[in-house]
Image (cartoon, rainbow, N blue to C red; front, side):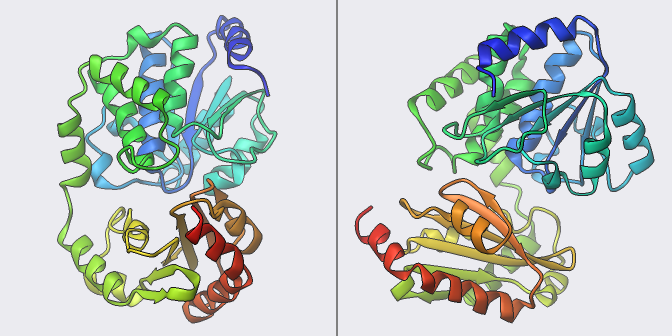
Length: 343
């Protein structure tokens, strides 16, 4: 992996060829994915590049206020059009994911593309599939990394208020509003730069967090009512089944952040959330102190992420998935206790 300075120097030379650019991110885009794609694409457009933003699938309505949202192409809705743009592109930019498999149905098109590839991502264990890789697992978010990338490219002056708000959103959401351990002094300095660009942090927070639907509250009620706490594992497990989703009128984004409610419980070191998705079950993991849920998700649920926040999947039934989860946690009972009692 190149140092950022060398990466940007090489990239600047390549960009003299004026390639068509496609900006992509991971399946089920969150605030960091959408914010980084919006901001970087907006800057590249101001520089006169032809840019298309292609996301694997749609994202939640509380992020649709960001600029350029109407120009996003969703792969699962317009595959032929998206494939053509990917085929014709001279540069693919991969934001907030470090393995093509995380792009869902886009994976084959990405792997088959002859375009040059740039990755900007903060997740652990990046795959080696790009010509330029800017990977830093110490960073709070991809949006924070995009700021440093823009600064090295000498493009930060092209960030208007709207694009700065997109970056701020990604930083705020990926740090749990600056409360996660990945939040550093540098994170706050980047946030300060964005505020100087005109970002109104209270308006961003309101757009993201004060647009809850009735279905979200109904689902949250069911999730918390059924929460299982396992004291000897310092763990809280939350789950929703397909019936819950259908009866409450589930909409994309309704369950975002539910796993954090388990983590906020006193005496809890680990929280897990299990949710049906695409014929299987998605799992989200959080840890409060130093237990590595990234390694846990990789070992047992074909997943990964960060030390304190990760995800995975299971093709077992809901009951079997939760039983297997408990079985795996009990394998680490002594380790979990050590982390919980000696943070």
